[in-house]
Length: 487
Ligand code: SAH
Ligand code: SF4
Ligand code: F3S
Image (cartoon, rainbow, N blue to C red; front, side, top):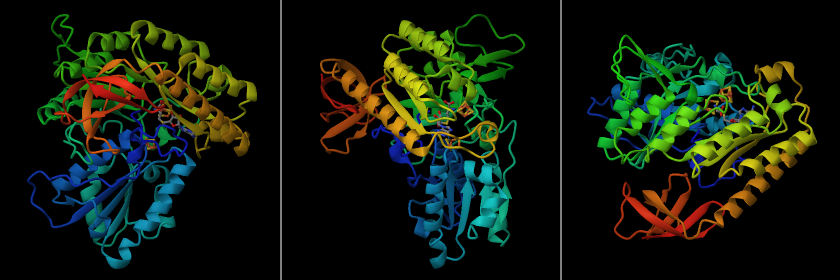
């Protein structure tokens, strides 16, 4: 997903991973009566977790808290955690011990663990981390104010109940760390796929879709507030499904009678129709679920970005079966063929895991040859990390030695670099419509933005400002960034 993985293995340094572990910036609370207390939130993991932090902040701001960037002045410090790989958890534990130092100076400050580690480890976290006061799972954020109250009264508080219904549809997120141009919108929660390596179904619970009308309203509000791009988020967006009693779908094929099902293709179209100047992205697509309907909807709307994150995980059919991904090599290739046919100018990116249980050298070669076949524009690449409780941990042996996993990963990373560098060689001379997002880190005189294909472009400022669209001609390229001039 527009992912912010904690994986050190990630090679795309320009991507959102720069946000990992970032403190959330100050957002103006919405005219709520202040309780004089400060909230500090730090987020790890995927975009959904960052989006959840905006819901957490909204719930706490409603209670009168003000959001601060400075953990030293906080009364409540919340760490929104990720369990996806062991390394992610290790890194967060280290950070928890650092943040505990705040309590030395300010003994009344509360430390809370939110998100996937809270859900996975439950009371174990309270036992292990003596200075942690709150443990709250992803479906229990509405209870935060009550749990904070209880912790303030000296009782450690925990709520890790998962829900089949909670989508926080009515909560207006407080946009944190925002550039005011691009925003995430959660469209669903949980995951019903049981990929054998993955902890997400355990930490996030059953899949449920959010009310489509509330999603469209959120997109409209964002647009009216100057935002120009939304990314629709879910672990598996293509299985989005919401039953509306009243809605008429945008293709206008008759009035809704009793009840109409909104599919992901319908939802994409509804959001694209908010305004042609609002770009729409989405993440993550599962190869088994993405339909031609979705591809034709992307084709139909100029403002739906021509970029699909399509995690492959492995290029070997045998490994994919062990991973319980429910597609094989041929199926994945045929999806890529459909994308290439229907959307010739679409880029594709992926997640790839090296060294899954019993993976042979030949099967690793199949992953490399899949990369050759697709030529991903970007990839998140990881070594397999066994997660307790998953199907793989229970039934398969994590038998590829770490050194071999790392060597295979390096080969994958190197090949990805070669592909990006080679493919970007054909970029100079091309002209793209770019949404200006902000000032480049390199120079105040340069702006940066992305094209529809999600490639980052850097170009001189001129009279442009964030939120504008510009036609930029590429003049040179590195493997990760395109340098251009406005025409
Ligand atoms: N829902 C998304 C993925 C969410 S997790 C999807 O299905 O595409 C993000 C990525 O982390 C996965 O795609 C996978 O590549 C990686 N990942 C998940 N569990 C992992 C594990 N146990 N070890 C290594 N990588 C893992
Ligand atoms: Fe995990 Fe698979 Fe669900 Fe993605 S689709 S979150 S990898 S179980
Ligand atoms: Fe996301 Fe990590 Fe949880 S990837 S869903 S925060 S385990």
